[in-house]
Length: 267
Image (cartoon, rainbow, N blue to C red):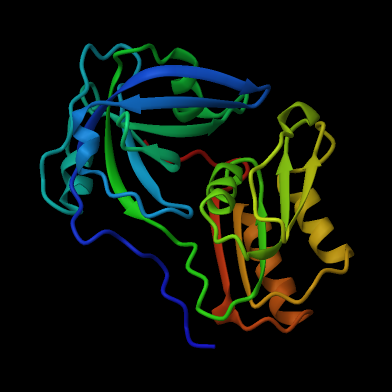
């Protein structure tokens, strides 16, 4: 199996403006923010775990100031902004996208110490302006990957669910989804060949630990392709186990440390 590409991005990318339409608290640790606005007409949905940079106001800012540089020039331009006008920037997944009406759903995992990203859906109100910069998708199973493995903690559950909801009907996969509490477990729209196991922590384990233990302690069909995302130790530990113990080629394992316990994202 050939080396997998790391990311698929749209042919053209530009920062688009949108605004909050409404916020729904879906469970104890999750909330969905629906965005809208004519700017979304320029957004190209790719399916899978398509992610984007979300720009939003800091507390106390009267208006959202967005970078204007083309391509990845936004990074330097944002960092050079004065602290009092610089927006927060965080990565999130497209949970769903609709052309009619023009809307984009973003699902947030809510942590007690989740920082500005976790606070945004709790304080966002209709009309709140945001910016989006598409970063493409990383779930890229090669042709012929008939059996798959998907493992995620709560920060990657929205991406995993988006993958399942846009997957072909003949997908066969083992899916492990770790969440903070039983209240966060819900029905999932997935192909009939997908076996989903929810793993509520209920405050008894380090994030990612239950998913890693379930992966290493249970027999499951040998995957042709694996996608693992979440806390850094989960991503690296799962990749190590799959390659060393299950002899899955490294090229068939896509793994992503979305966050690291005890370390906050840079502002």
